[in-house]
Image 1: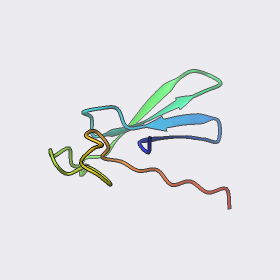
Image 2: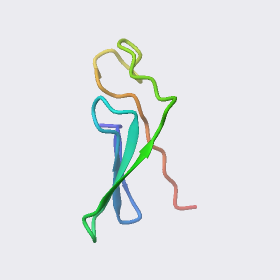
Image 3: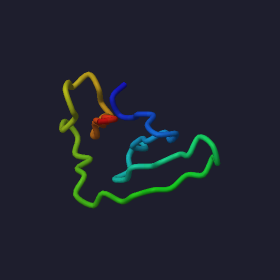
Length: 64
């Protein structure tokens, strides 16, 4: 899916039904959260396609 990514030793994801991004450190296994107060969780406002009924966030990472 497109609602998560592994980058620089951590797993980043948007938990279902929450306006947050979570970072799970794969080494320490600690989880931290960042609130995104303007993230919309409105029905029928999904990314890409109505067939993806829980994707509100897309991640883009680059090593450069």
